[in-house]
Image (cartoon, rainbow, N blue to C red; front, top):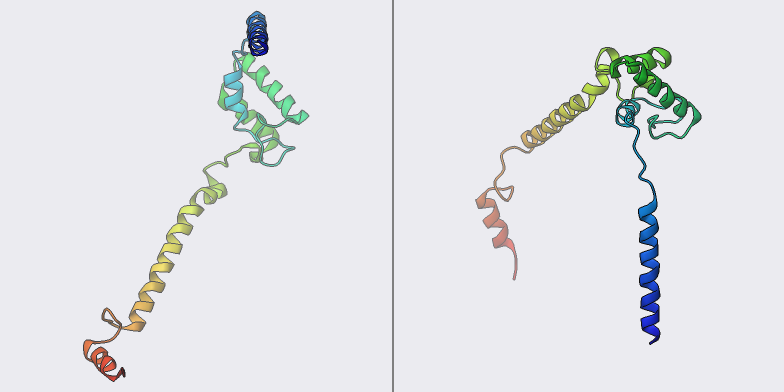
Length: 154
């Protein structure tokens, strides 16, 4: 009997909570939000280290997001908005460095380092092999191996 009362109470609470959830108005997303996000994730917050202005909670990032909304409302393109911030804050504001000039080294360095490391490893292995000379499977010739086995005492 007590279990029925507990189950009935649980079902009533569940029904009430579901009924209240249905009365809540759906929140509409701002139509500018996807475009704002696509621009804001490309820009670094000047206050926070390594954080986009979309993820940052600083007041500067909030002001920059509001400025992006204004520029979108004015009808500016994404490239124009990003170049506006680059003119104002410099190339540092970009999350990805430009692929030109001295910044090109940042993009090329991993590939060059991998190539140089692989070449150095192959060179070291080749030198070791040439220093050891030609070797058989055991590192000695068969006759010498048989002589060693025969010298072993039982």
